[in-house]
Amino acid sequence: MAAKKATKSKRKPPEMPPVTPSAELAVVLGSTKQMKRTEVTSKLWQYIKKNKLQDDKNRRNINADDALKKVFGGKKVVNMFEMTKLVNKHLKQD
Image (cartoon, rainbow, N blue to C red; front, side, top):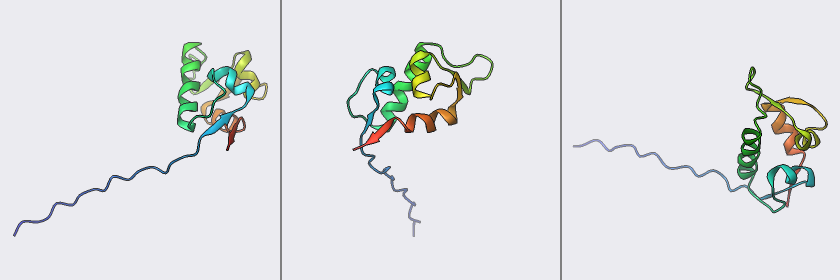
């Protein structure tokens, strides 16, 4: 008798509702329309990399330009973990 192969079920992540960025965050993202949280994160990192805002010595730190300072509450340097917390304040779930 052949042993049955265990099949892994593909777990789907829960569907996240779209979020609306604040006016300050929309300047950075380039859009005021509703989008998924993952899309917000992706666009934010595109902005950071395009403008070379990641610190050269400590890659976990983000050096804010004028637009990001408004999102980061006036802070010049923010680490990645703090950045997530600060960006969440600028997202509104509908």
